[in-house]
Image 1: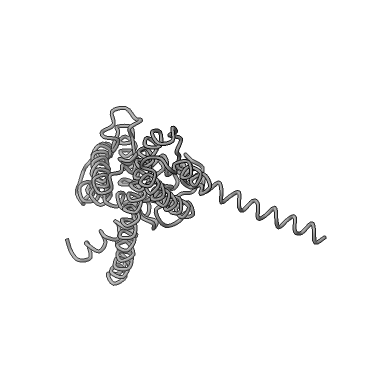
Image 2: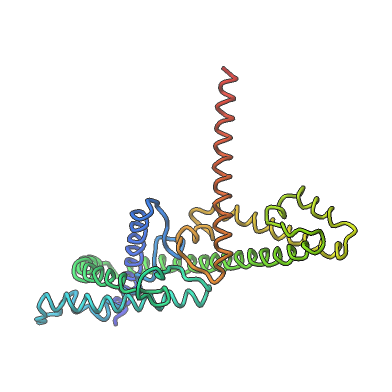
Amino acid sequence: MSSYGFLHTVFLFFLYSFLGWCVEVAYAAITTRRLVNRGFLNGPVCPIYGCGMTVMIFLLGRFSIPMPGAADPWYVRLIAVFFGGMVITTLTELVGGYLLYKLFHTRWWDYSAYRFNLGGFICPQFSLLWGIGSVILMLFVHPLLNGSSAHIPRQVLLGVDLTVGLLFAADLAASVVQAVGLGRQLARIDDVRAGLRRVSDALTGVIGTGAMTVDTLLDEQKLQLTLGAMEGRDNAAELGGQLRDLADKAREVRRASVQMSRQKFFGTGRLLRAFPDMVPDRREAMVALRAALSRAASAARQAVSDNVQDWKDGLRKDR
């Protein structure tokens, strides 16, 4: 491959990554009626689409843009692209999903509800859709984009590839940090939940009740009442120290959850919006986190509503 051919391939990788992102956003908008950045990265790219298309161009390019002298009938091209594209995109989705799972212990998309799925990473229903999409892209879209971009000057291609590549690398690094941060938040939630179970069991033996919840930990008055009820009991000092430590951890989890609820376009909170069906190994912690984010968002909306009402009341008084 010539240097120009390499630069052109990199350009097409980024182009199809962007088009794939557009497809994901459009699909989410149709199914959920919400505009959400559906990529792992913060920017408008889905690299898994770019990877799949790059492999298809390399392996199936002759069917997309027949070589001079080729005599492949249209139906041969269609069948080859459909089945070849279906296999390539399905394998790309499987490998990409499996690698992300191994890196972050999370299934970022989950096809477990579909019959004959493989590990929740792939399923035949979507494989058929990928096959149809491959036909549309390789036989209709790619010839147009490839022909239009083939005449871009080499220096322009080099500048575009370098600029987008640097932005892509920076975005990838930031997104990995955010995904790791999500894992840490889930681990903190699990830590609080496990500690809460241990303390509740101990409280049953000390003061005859195990009714200790996260809300109790976060409510200073309720926490002090619980600590007061323990005074003079066996192991009160040790158990009280555990309660205070657990309360500090719960407050930190709540602060982080409130911060994540505000991250609509960047950060760990955006990842949760981008992948509403993600399935981490810490499933119970994810349920608790999403509930905390929902409560934080509701509290923020209520605060805005109260402020607007106060402003209206102030206007009425001024009149």
